[in-house]
Length: 197
Image 1 (cartoon, helix red, strand yellow):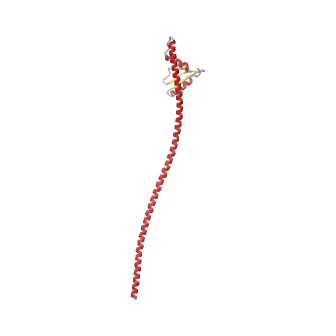
Image 2 (tube, rainbow, N blue to C red):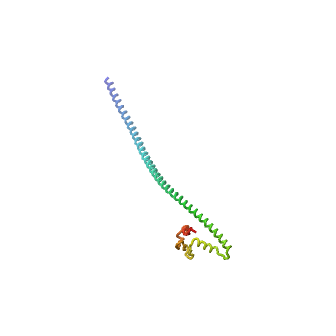
Image 3 (spheres, rainbow, N blue to C red):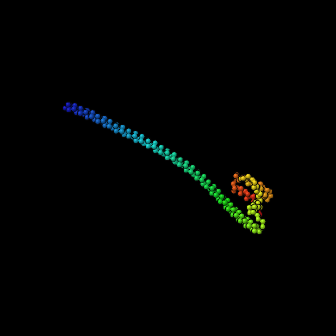
């Protein structure tokens, strides 16, 4: 019986020793499994950190693009306002030019009518008189009578010179056609003509 008890004790000892070995092996397996889980966790965390950095970089790029777009929109709005102001100014200038053109058309029509009248008078004078007056001389005399301008035909080219015999005083005319527009010269000369006949 004592031997059986000794054997039982050895068996329990062996079983406990085997149990301890199994627990150690299981503990090693659990530790390996734990290390694998920790490695995967670290890899996942690294991946998440990388993705977070990438997302932040993309967000920063989007924010920068948005700021640039807002700036472009602001500049575009400013440029649009400038273009609208230029368009309004051009429309006003066009209206002014249209009015001037209408006035010039009226004046041109009046001049054509005057010229037609002068030609008619010239024909009548030619019929009524025996003395023939050359038409250019006649027109020049008629223009002189209307405008009261005595032209200097011997002035240098590009210059408009003469004397306007106004209602009270004679006024010299000295205009440089290379420096002044034909419209300005024409308007200036017409302004000298007395509208009271």
